Image 1: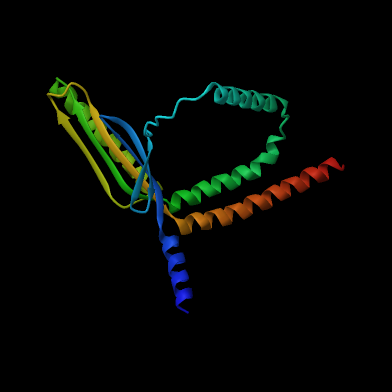
Image 2: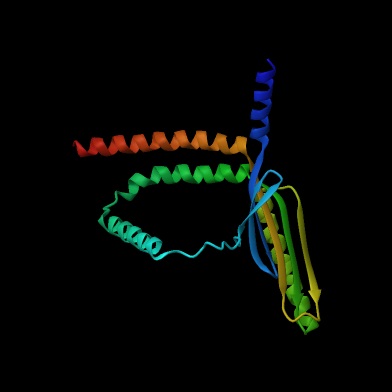
Length: 204
């Protein structure tokens, strides 16, 4: 009995376990991490590897693989675009559901406007506030935002306008599995239907 309870507990924890991605832009450049629960794994820029240099043999294999891929692509004839439309509809529905299930854990945008002319700076400040307000309204409509930190400042002494931004997106394992099963089955049924129609057309 205890074993079953532990197994159920593990399944529940995995179901609510969040996965995601974090992207940051600041003065030092762009950086990105994969979020696995509370753990952040940097994916860009990647850490330098001392053994990153490729040998001539590896380069030759890569070139041969690229050459074969290009040759195979040239030989492909493709199919009717109309056959592809049902799968496009499935993909669009999937993206719509995915958007609803993704959570914006943290949204940050700090913008500091710079100008030597106070009048120009005031005009730009008003325009930027209006633009950011409209952008945030659209973002609120598309996603559920848990926490946001948006600020626009002016700096008469700065040489150029600077921006610092961060976006953390997360989704639970349960939602990923639900989407994968639902749309995986739907895509497979659509594929079988397309295949059946094409085979039926070929027999005419």
